[in-house]
Image (cartoon, rainbow, N blue to C red):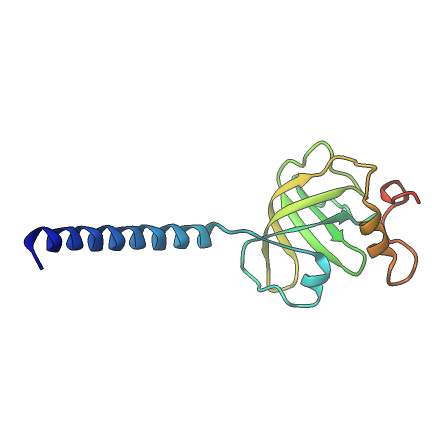
Amino acid sequence: MTRTRRRRLMLVGCLLLGLSAAAALMLTAFKQDMLYFHEPSAIAAGTVPINTRFRIGGLVKMGSVSRPGDGMTVHFAIADCDASVPVTYSGTLPDLFRQGQGVIAYGKLDAQGTFVADRILAKHDSNYMSSDTARALKAKTSVSCMPSRLQASR
């Protein structure tokens, strides 16, 4: 092998090694920043690890909102068709937050099974639901668990 070919081979090898190291660092950084989404039924089933940051989404359960003490702490439950999870949040709630409204909360699940949120996002009211989603929700009992204003018309 000539000197020129050896230099080219060394250069290509170093470039591949550098690109591999950069890709490994990027994948590690992305893995640390990933935030998984779980539904209340998965949390109630016990499949979600505690003290791990994730998102939870569903409807604010009717009659579950309470503000004990200082008024900044709010206790409520997020529910889907099968289960509900108690949530504690300290801070200012979004203007669209109310009972029966869709929300997404960011935070961690504690050892008692309460989701301790550090951020709440309220979803705006939407009257559209695809027919596939409506059929899937009605599949178990033939009665939808969603509020009537969110059900698809046939």
